[in-house]
Length: 86
Picture 1 (cartoon, rainbow, N blue to C red):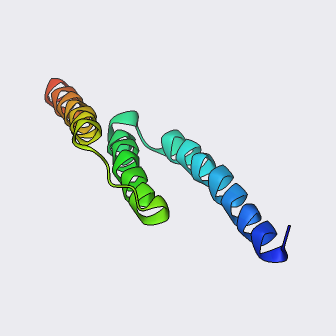
Picture 2: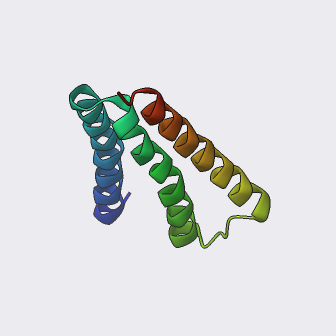
């Protein structure tokens, strides 16, 4: 294994471990309704990363699924906000 491959592997391992760590910290300091939109954004960024890294375009069925998940999450957040209004 070349040193470039090893350095890339270390960077991927760090990114894979620090990302969830920072999400746990964020959830410990903010309520879940505030943080949940960021989880839905991760789905979209995963699709962009798939396009960038593997030159794979998301098909229409997968795109529809992602949009449904994000829409249901936004509706659930909106309903939660409406329920908690004074």
